[in-house]
Image (tube, rainbow, N blue to C red; front, side, top):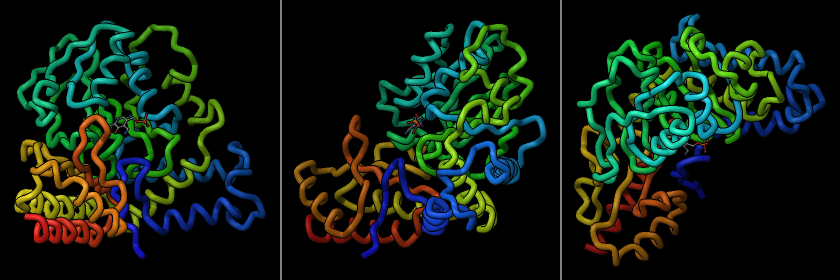
Length: 354
Ligand code: PMP
């Protein structure tokens, strides 16, 4: 029976990607060795790195000013690496959720943080569009998609200050002008690959300005010089990323995925808005196309709803532990059919219980 996987991360990947990467773990390219057994300095792996880098550049339409890195430590290490490499005295942050807040707390250990907007008091249910980025800050940090609460930035500011963006949960899901960013980072376990690898896309010129003595692993310039091979990278996760990015390219690129993602999320939000038993608490214009959160209007129905979706082989629908309720993560690889299936279950639930 088909399992409908709405996990928030690690999460669903295209079936063919899983199949190919499993095959490579058994025998990579019929070379008699597992992908896990080949050297990260071998020609075979060099080719994987080159192909993956080029796919990122092509799909995002990046120009030659940008370097693409495959690092470890998750997006969490980027909360530290960003200020270490880019903050002289002060940086501006948007506090749009728990992850943004974690980034702020790490940045405060390095320098001054100016919070331009905090959605905390309104339970992060919207994202302000009325903040102003001061001229004197070293960079502006934002989170494009707030995985826990289910909000997403639809517009990015027009500014000469470098924009640093945590795109962990919506990278490769919609077309943006990626060259408007100074640095983009994303951990792989949502739209790209297995956990344990973080993609960093950085405009090289923004790295020249800091004089700080940076520990080697935290220094973007050293990673650029070493082509992400300063130490042993996550070979498996990089290879699986390559397969996912090929899958995206073969589908026709990010704009095709964006259309599909819009269609899937619209159907689900329409159902939540229509259904008498559920509600979404996010301002409509800020709703995420990737993480759709919703709540039961009557809490006493929780047991019944949980029983129903679990019985139907739906997994990963629980809301984040800090928030409760439900969250359907509808990343690139989830099919329209799975979303429609969830909607049918919600309709059936309403039919029985309202
Ligand atoms: N930022 C965002 C937006 C996330 O969703 C997550 C993880 N879910 C993180 C950062 C942290 O990522 P990691 O666990 O890879 O450090």
